Structures are given as structure tokens and as C-alpha cells.
Image (tube, rainbow, N blue to C red):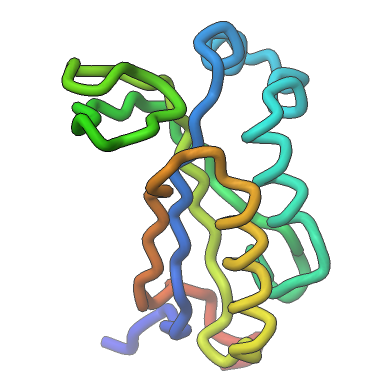
Amino acid sequence: MTRQYDLRPACALRIHCPVAEPVLARLLAGDRQALEDDPALAAMLAIVRGDNPLGDFGLYRGVMELSPGWELFTPTDTARPTAGTAGENAVSSTVILTVHLPHDAPQDRIDAAIGAILRAHPWEVPVIELTETRLVTRPPQGG
């Protein structure tokens, strides 16, 4: 049997971004305007939507997935946490942005986009993951 799909190499970038609890509640209730009402999230969205290879699917640009969640952590005595208090268990409402980028995107453009994310991210230690992956695609027409 012939495989009915193609595989395209890509990279996946996952950005864990804090959001205010009321904003997360609005997002969970389906209020899309909340995306733009949280400063940290709005900054991340603006970067992904910018002129860079993040979320580039050829016919579509700025493609991303948002997943709600909560980060659990305990800041050490020497930490300067954005949320929480040193030595105490903390929970931060979070949105995880997942974007894909072509494996052959120019490295300098990837570096510039990730640098912008790091500069805009409010956490002392941002959680950002970059992994190699493969995307399932339809075969070319007539293929």
C-alpha cells in the first residue's frame, strides 16, 4: 500500500508565556479579545506574527497553537520571580504557544526571532523549547 501522506522536516518552538488569571479565564470562555489584553501574551503574538519564519506554512503565516496551562515552581532564595515568593510553592497561569518553522529557514532569521522572544519574555528564566520534528502533509497534487 502506498503511503498517502508526505513528511516535511520542521522545527517546533514552544513558548511558555504567563498570562493574568482573568485573561486565562476569558480565553477559556472563548473571548478571543483576551489574546491582545495581556501584555506578555500580546508581545509574544506580535513577534510570531512579525516578519520572520515562525509559523510559516507557505500559504499561511503566523500559524500557532495556544494551550492553556499552569506552571508550578518554587523560587529559590536568590531568585527574583515575576510571580511567586522565594521559598514558597507557586502556580502561574500560563499559555503555551507552539509554532513551527521550516527546517531550512535562515538561521539568522530564526536567531533574531528567538532573541526578540527572549527580550520580551517577562520570566527570569523563560521556558522555551526548540525541537526538530516532522509535519505530516498531503502529497503534491497528481502525486
